[in-house]
Image (cartoon, rainbow, N blue to C red; front, side, top):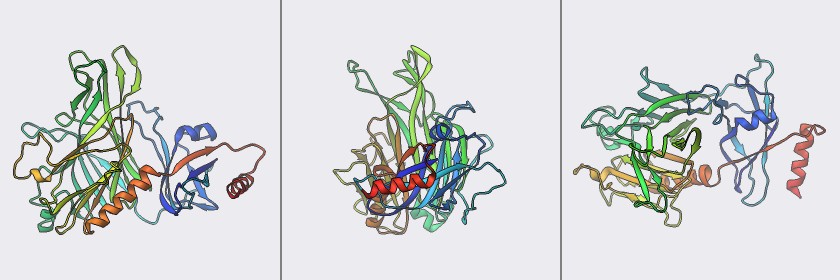
Length: 407
């Protein structure tokens, strides 16, 4: 099966290509336990994995399954021209045939014994995810990333981590998707309904790992819209959080799924707007700066001029028009300079990148975030599945595609 991948830039790149499982099932004699091999030209690629992602408890749900492939060289395809490069996907019939082993350790993910916490790690980054909200008055931890360790040092409280790597850090530091906003009908008194997600427990669903990435699926508390007493829609917000090989960032896919009261057996995906909360110390202004291009609200960075020069970058498929510092409802006083909040626009699915840096000048961290937005959001590699014609060999298809590109 030939997969055309378009690198819509004038420069070579590297990165992860995800192929929907539904396309593989349509074109290949493939099964859930199949082994696959992916070639670029005549060279088998080392980092290939089947991601059996699901957000329900149904083990046969394959709607989110993907084949993830790390391609270390993507030939330029041009901004306008259709000049894709081919990946050849085949099912390995003999289980004794092994794909080439990656030379570096793959990222991994572990769920706690009780399913209340998750740890993800790669050779650069380590993430600790807490699912339980906690007990009053500290009941605000639901679904929060409460520690981010970059190259062995905490980055959410980098100043304290320079004094001691493991002790005396800010106990409230975290990165969190804390609220979701759903649109109301045009005739409603309020334009939107905001639902709190951080004061209730989240749920672990499933996880996976391989040479390309480690990932975990978590489920928010139940969403009853517009209210608990007479909900017209009941569902959950889901986050598929991925930590890629050799990455100082995490990537997530976010969506809301559920059913309407009028049709409880018919699942539907609805438009939503997520709100993020960040408690990370950059010192006070003007040492701390929020950097955002006015005409491109899809990404921003928060940087500091104080050593160790930690930075946080965010990019998403939907715009963020305002970054609050602090948020309007944060109860603290002495540490409010380290509190940030932002909302995205409405969408049925959001893809977001969270980037963590330390030790780089602010302008370099900002430039790297902009590049991640370009490579992973705006001009992410586009997969186009090509059905192989019975009368054509694989070599003939490659030659025909090369000839059409030259014309």
